[in-house]
Image (cartoon, rainbow, N blue to C red; front, side, top):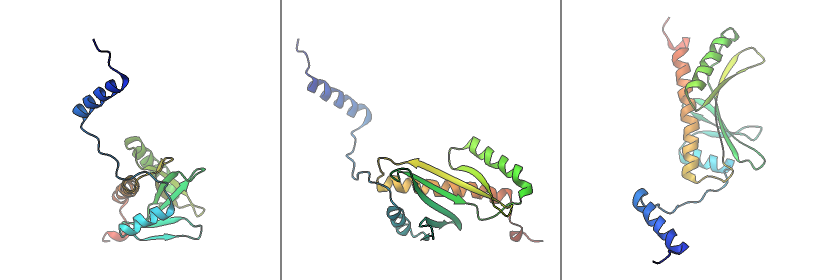
Length: 172
């Protein structure tokens, strides 16, 4: 009886996996580091408005809401998409809004929802999606992540719009 070589065993396992799982397509693009320039190019390609503020941070508008795109970490490998609801809430509703954020976070993975209390006592609701891209991302991966941050943040803000209708939007 013939004892199979390592190469023969490898080929046999590869054929079995290909039969059971399908043949893997070779990657068409390779991951590369994420940079503000890549994010800006994605924004331009998708015809989104964007800007660079006085601190050099990249921001943009998505469905009338302000989002920022930050890169953190020693090698700027952590991408964070942070949105801010376009309305403020009175400090008297702080506990209520914290409950809304906590309920959101308990039921969903993205975005993380939290509040910030400004010096003027007004409450801002923030959405945040972050991921470690230490090994870079392909253009399609980056696009998917950016759309995820923007769309899930918008879902949170839509829920807030529904819970707290704008008085200017309703008839007296």
